[in-house]
Length: 143
Image (cartoon, rainbow, N blue to C red):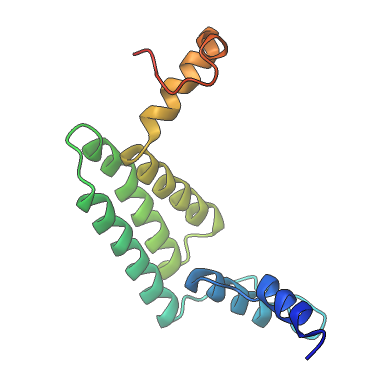
């Protein structure tokens, strides 16, 4: 059938492909209905929100612990655990957007510290000293 290729391409570009994208897509579809945007001045945490926040936080915590590295993980946990606590507190008792996004940022930094944070800080220091331009294109780092 002619013309079906373009429609399938459009649907492939528009529809979400991963579970988290699907949740975001459906949440946006619910909030943006009838040509208006739903706004709430007071957020009441529902049971699905609390469960989803707790499960995602637990998955992040277990993932970092499964990727245990003696020098990185304890420091990462010092940033990650308060971030998880801030997100869960904000979702359950209404700590506000500032607390929620601060917790998300702390969780992101904790995950990054456990993973490849040292690589980026080393590259940043090299760039600031001017050593990166001399070794451009090489994957070796001077430590």
